[in-house]
Image (cartoon, rainbow, N blue to C red; front, side, top):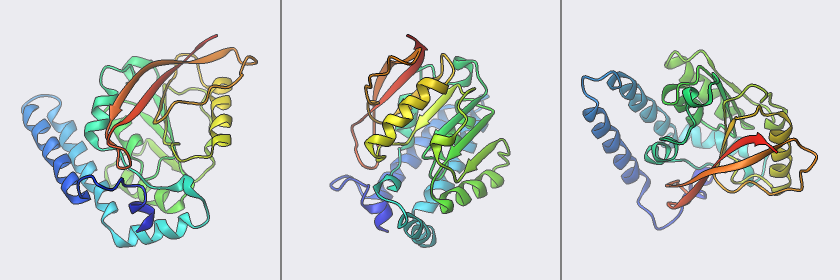
Length: 244
């Protein structure tokens, strides 16, 4: 239980109350899209959100996550982004597959697979690989992918620093709780391996390093306020890999 609770900011709405608000947001969005080409897709997203939110209320999932987390530190803390925040961050930000011109994306710290699923269903990426340290989360993500027939999505219980990022259009970083030295290694990896033009999303500013040895830089494109479970006014950062 602590694996969930300690990363939800106190003083905000109760979790079930906030989930109800999210459900209402989805209901209204689907109603606005009635009889349009988008209605079916958002019906699927609504079912996906309900399925993933169900894990957060499942004592068996909580226990397994807690047992998995005991082998790691705070870097495996659980938090979530409410769907309204996802929409506000991604709209008009150049993050879709059509915008980047690439078919694949990856998520570091994929947990239950939220951004992989939404990257495929909402942003149009045909393939996504999620990297996660906790085997229980990978198993849960794989089960949901099978339920929804999303065979092109892959989830690996693997160190994200070993990931192949050479052909990505989008890299989503759930690295908020990762140690500072690991974040620095991550930035070095992005600058040395990510393709030119790739988009990077981070829930905090990426470390500014003395990286003159690299021919690429991370250019900040935009920031966007979004609501997460641990901070209702968190500022998301969108970067682009560019030539120095």
